[in-house]
Amino acid sequence: MKDTRNLKLTILEQLKPGLKIGIMSHIEPDGDGFCASLAWQHFLAVQGFESEIVIDDDALDSYQFLMHNARLREYHPELGYDLLFVLDCNSYSRVGARKSLIDKAACTILIDHHVPENGLIQADYSFIDPDYVSVGAILYRTFQEEINALPPKSRIPIANCLYVTILNDTNNFTNANTTAEVFATAAGLAGLGIQPHALHKAYFLNHSPLEMRYVGESLSTIELHHQNRILFMHSTVEMAERNHLRPEEIMSITRWVQGVRGVDVIVHFREERPNLFKLSFRSVKLDVNRIAVRLGGGGHINASGAHVSGSLDQVKQAMLSELTQALDNQHSNA
Image (cartoon, rainbow, N blue to C red; front, side, top):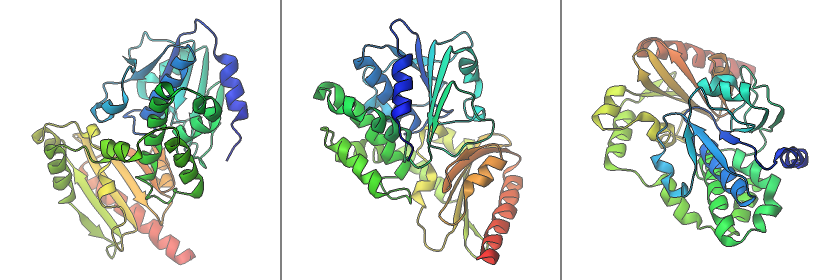
């Protein structure tokens, strides 16, 4: 893991009274990017700095339990900031129209734990280290002394958000990235007065009946290919509309099938509009990030995503060909 001392010094040098400060993550922010943004906003506030978390028209209801006093601003082209923090992404392809905020900012500080992706963001200072489990973990490592010294009223909201970033990116400590270091970080946060069981329940178990029906309908589409080593499933716009949901409100469907016996690769095809699908890849055998990057997306070695155009059948066939070849090549090289 990289030493965070230079990151800390850079941030402290840039924080000056009167600055207009923005915080943003990637499009469709997840439990790391958005919760890290909330934690960082809390931390800045107790240091005397106001900030805004810039979002799109995002579905954020699942994070309400962490959003007390959050200051959010929906993106519009006229927005601009003196100091901009970009969290949990390093590629222009993952920030959408909010690229303009990076272009206009007097100073941009990027903090991420993904492998560098397509179109690396040109920030004034970048800290990118895939060895960290989450961006929240990077923030905690960087300002641990300051966070630990805060009174409970200030530190617990920060620690809550940081702990959820770890819950998200380890899938509740079940992913391969769960290490002794991760448990040590989680233990440190737990020691600050948070309630891990309550955070787990609020984040993972707070599903409505309609959400569960949507999950079930998606699971009912499971197909197995290549001697049952490849699992495909899909969700449609019609499924979401019938259940009165926005698809981005639903935590990754792939978590319901991770660890299924004998399966090497999982792909969830989520229809966003006709002939456009968001693909979520999960694998403990393949570097799916390489595949996602070739498609213009990215993520982690074992968990990545990308958007692909075409009919469902076309996209499935393309992915089946790519994944079959990757698995066969891996077997032949073993």
